Length: 325
Image 1: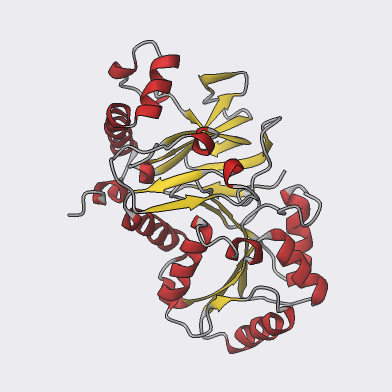
Image 2: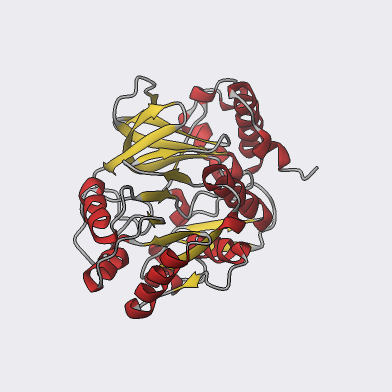
């Protein structure tokens, strides 16, 4: 058994709790940035035995610190940005762990990837070869084993013809995944009626268009592509797992990832009453970095494995690919 196999074999809350506490103690002992943070804010961090007592590391630490729980790393993912100083860095010690996470998660949400053609419209991210999103989509495209899967960056005429061709052919399911501004540019170029194509947005206008609330964006995209639902992917450089929404902006987490709500005025106050607040994420796939992240996103819980994103914490930087304001 691969040493990370148990992360993706979690079956229930008891399994999740055990994995959380085991990984917390491992990271507290071996991740010195996280250890120092825990010591600073927590009275007795070495004896924590409940999930809601685990400290969550502010996501901004990924911009200034090397967040790593092991000695070596084989790859670094960078967030989108114009300068290296302002970009988050995620040091990856085992790229296979990331692959297992996004492949298992895709299968849980959409089934066998061999049944799909994946078309990617990610022009800005494609320029960033150290993007975790590009890495994931490139490998999912390869796993489809379809010659028609691929990246279509700025040739909207060619992409339009391909989408219509795949819709008519209809021998596989098609996913068009893209950043919102590029998807909007595409429907400005051509209007569609894609009854059997999944449209998936990854969040963020990248300064290319005015930001808009997700509901408004989805209405425009539904009208332009002729579909009933818009899917969404919630991910970020600092996480090795994603949450997916199949419509209405409700994101579902896999069993090794969970969202919590914290009080924006008290980072250690986790509110389990489904009120809105700032989002904390536990991502057990972050085994070799830090699994307990206090994000800059605002949201609310829908149920134990679903949440909504409703905005940004005031004064947090606008991120590239993980949400809409």
